[in-house]
Length: 311
Image (cartoon, rainbow, N blue to C red; front, top):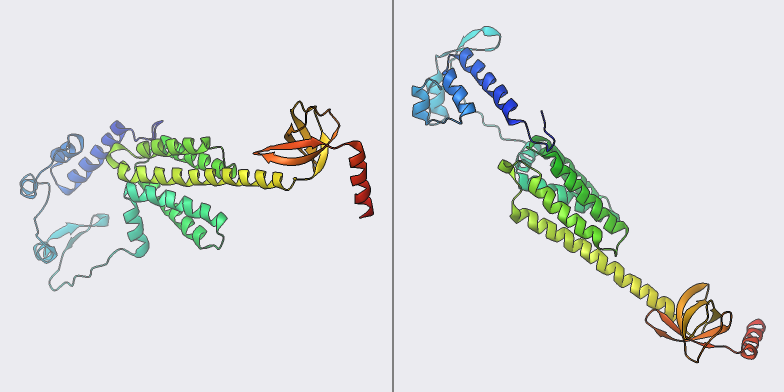
């Protein structure tokens, strides 16, 4: 059973575990009372105490000693059959974890699972800017492994929701760069989600959480800064190409108003007094995102138009 915050209902889990271990102890002829205390009261014992209490059968310092002491013992196996162990001359074969199992085992560390999740997201996002398949593939594998690890760790639902909210905020910043507010929301959601993602017994370390949040915030801040710089650059270059171009006054300039030049409307300042609405104007200068214009007399405009037709 899972609560609203994703935490396991401890009382229910405790009762189930106690009943299960008591059943095993009784079936194996062990100390069932102590086994129940170990679950409900966190009772513990040294190896010698456990042997004296009837919790374990024997103590062995290493595997060869264990095999010698188990040799000749009768044990009950599946189906209720009793088998006598013959371990004389038995060879020991050691098998390590495979690559996949070993990687998953390491990812069961909350810090590594959290890092794999965000590194995977970053690589998948980078694939859109630097296509090629490698970054996206590696990022996808890391995301899958982190999700599998989340499924095996004591994850809280509220933490997952906050992390997904952080992802949404950062995606919004990438799609609409220059605003900045989604970056703030993403960093705050990431920090809050990382703090409550797991139960307190398996919490993400602040030494991992803070650098990840700082890196994501710095990346989004870089995107915002770059977008604003490009906007200003486009605006300036767009205005510079209008120098010497003619247009019309959309509103009366006294001396500020709006003009239309090259099918675009711009805020403009008159350099020579009031310019009525509808009059022809020429761009003679630029001040930031404002145009400085002067009125074009009708005779001059007619000559310019005639020269344009003859050329």
